[in-house]
Amino acid sequence: MALEEKGALYGRLASGEERYAALKDTLGTMSLIPVLNSERTRITAATREMLVDITGTSQEVVGKVDTFLKTHLPDPQLAPQRLHEAMRYAALNGGKRIRPLLAFGAGALTEAPEEALTVVSASLELIHAYSLVHDDLPCMDNDVLRRGQPTCHVQFGEAMALLAGDTLQSLAFQWLGEFPLLEDASRQLRMVQQLALASGSRGMGGGQAIDLESTGTTLSLPELEAMHLKKTGALIRTAILLGADCSQAPLPPEEQRSLVRFANALGLAFQVMDDILDTESDTATLGKTAGKDAAGQKATYVSIMGLAQAKALAADLLSTSCDALTAFGSRGRRLQELAHLVHNRRH
Image (tube, rainbow, N blue to C red):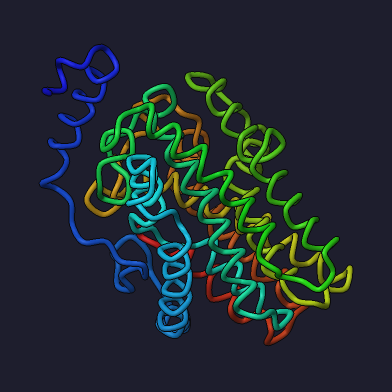
């Protein structure tokens, strides 16, 4: 049956497909690691060496997490097949896997076992994937492109995309609760609680609500920071803290405070770079619609500060995050590499 024959819902879907088709020919191949000689940023020799060094480790972590996702996501042959197809499409459709990389990086601080880190990382990715599916819906940001592919609602319809996001979220908590990660079950229960807080009204969900309510208005810098510490920062912070918590021996309080400082600075740095890339980059590089924030009258660091000051802020936040890692000595090297990766990424 043609899309235009399926009523108002599929009428909106048809317009989304047309928008995606108009973008499709511009897409290029996307890479996990940024191009080191990008004209967008001047990268020192030391940073270039650091980014090259992390490539192999990053690909290994991504491979482990992707294998877990492919193995443990519901088989698309099982009923309801269309829902399971949509769940796998959303979770396996590429992505940088930044949150798993950060979880593994923090796990290096405490010598956490990779089996526990893999489960935590996969659970984090399900929360992230669900948030993107919902964020792209017509009632939210109304986007047709994600990771260089049609968004979930363009591919499967709005109703099925909504259900895919819902069920990815619940599956994340199932995994985090059912796999034996720690000998102390009460600590594992706190990990479930941490992820729930990061996802809910005091975290990512609350930040998204503030973003929706502030569209078309002017936010102050403190208001923008508060929004993004929830919307973007909460899940990044939780990825780092859960990674460190995968060890049987938790970090001492002073190191825990240093890790929180690192995580908060990095979460904001990630968002500032997102705002810069949305301004400077193109659709083919980003794998999503460039210039979306400005077109939607969203408050961003670039719109409030200007591009030059936003870049300076990103550099300051990188410095702040790396300074917080000095408490860990050489144990913090992996997280320092990842902080530079976040700052120098191209998408």
